[in-house]
Image (tube, rainbow, N blue to C red; front, top):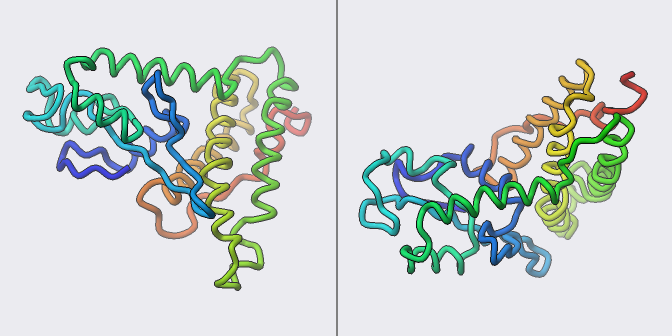
Length: 235
């Protein structure tokens, strides 16, 4: 998701926010192509950041009504696959700014529904919605996580499997978990709210490491108490 446009280039926080809002799919409503592809034992991303208003005065959908810094903000960028990015920039008249803004808004709503971000009537229902996501992440971590013995074996293929599953399963699951929790904050206790915010920081650091520019150090770790939110343990 690199972009070299000077001040019009989105910063790391904006890049991560774009990834999160896309759910890993092209934001063109007629495309929805996955932006992460499994190629052999590796997972690659093909995401490209398309400016709604051009990054420069000579670009497609150019305008002088916003500053160069504003052109690199989250609100002015959509995440597209390479084909859609090329099309919207080659035919800007067919894809005006309002159309691209609508794509982004509609995509966010669709992702919210897909991620199960609905309001449940009680804590038990929320817990049941979270359980399979937490279980899948925990199972992957226990089988392939970086604390396994393979870290001492430079020829082990498990590191590649871990990387692939991190991008294709754990990171999307994390966003689903946050979406469900945020839609049901009314059911959280005070202690649970703290645990959720610790998890949010963990998600941010994990995405920075595996999708963004990387982070130094270990970053925030997964809070084990998240497995107990919305359960009797907090009541």
